[in-house]
Image 1 (tube, one colour):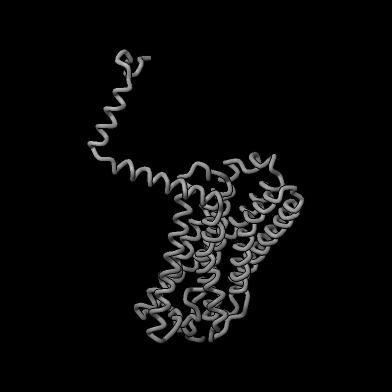
Image 2 (tube, rainbow, N blue to C red):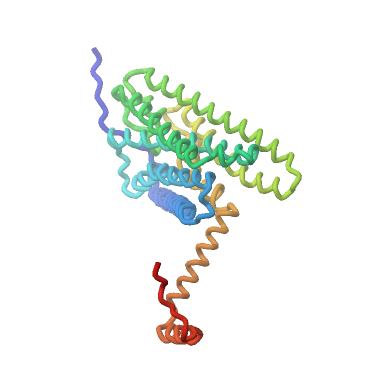
Length: 342
């Protein structure tokens, strides 16, 4: 019987051993994280406050922004902390929590992007039935299904990954806990439970991506038949950002989990992981939300309302009394301004 030293913690990889480059990494990731927080929070706030944005498209966009907000918060703060403190240790419990959250939010986002492609398909290809297809109840059910898909996938991957002990070197070749790198440290080779879970998730992911592609084939074929040039351009500018976000997110996540892992990770490995964990949640607000015409209009209205409120607050008591006196002089003496009794 072979004795194994059971691992209780892991060591994550830092981006550089040079102090200056570590500070540069911490500053860059801090700026990216701040941009992601501000962009996603702004979308959540504006789509919640503005009545004109209470539509299915912005309902799902609000959920997407919340997912991105949580998704990037799982990995980036820990990576910044490692660069600043030189402590790249992470416990088994922390690593399991990170794995669950990454899979949870990634799978929920992919499911939500699929739902959003159906929303665009219904809006452009079946405009007369859009309100029926995308009723409030249907939107809530689709969003709930996306969150449930993420939670089930997260539980399955976390349980299957940590169902066997780890007994090899406890150094992960990544700046966060990633399943392929963890499997290399497993005492059981191969881990059939995780392989089965990965195959199932990959098939579901490919199914979602295929559905999105087919939806956009129908959408673009319908758009090309539109007689109005303005209508075609509006439809393209509405749908193209969604397609870009989905393609970047899915392809980088797929490559990161399917490609063989090595003992010495390359720059390409890091770039692929950074794209689907860091870049995608940061670019979503800029590509999909804040450059949208409706979002810009809602933001402009919010700014005008704030300016009007500030102007009202800046009125002096003397000016207000003069204004009130002028208003009272306009009211005829015989008019009773008291509210009428029922």
